[in-house]
Length: 177
Image (cartoon, rainbow, N blue to C red; front, side):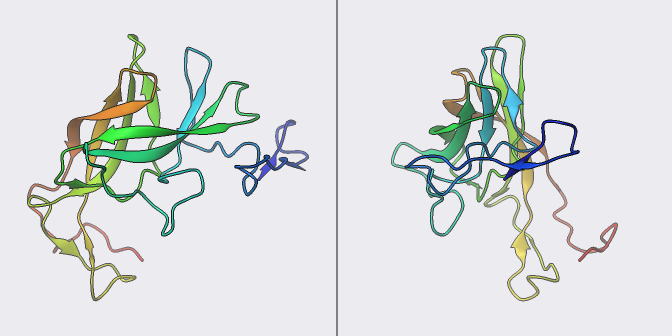
């Protein structure tokens, strides 16, 4: 990781952290990081724990139905970070595979909204055969919103925002590789 403090004119290496984060730089905040009103910078990494689970990605739900995702937290405007677990409570049919693109917004009441995408078993049933997955294909996903009322310690499913109700995998608007 490299950081610029002069608008990109010069760049310097961000120092590595001490164990247990020895394989990570002191700050990994990216495009989906969010500065809260209570002074924390938060970012969901999309990984199940701070050592990046093998294989990478979200682990299956625990006995109470929650999914553990890594939340990066900073109290010094992103210069350094710690890692904690955020628990996601989603409908069991919603098969979450990552949270790498999950941005956040804070509402006036201090709650947080975050979004992601996942496949809803039994509804999003069609498989799209992308060029990189021509034999197995990938299931269609939907975008959904989650809400946290405890400063990002847990998020609960709130609503589906968009999905393809037709499940049409033909007559695509565009083709992409």
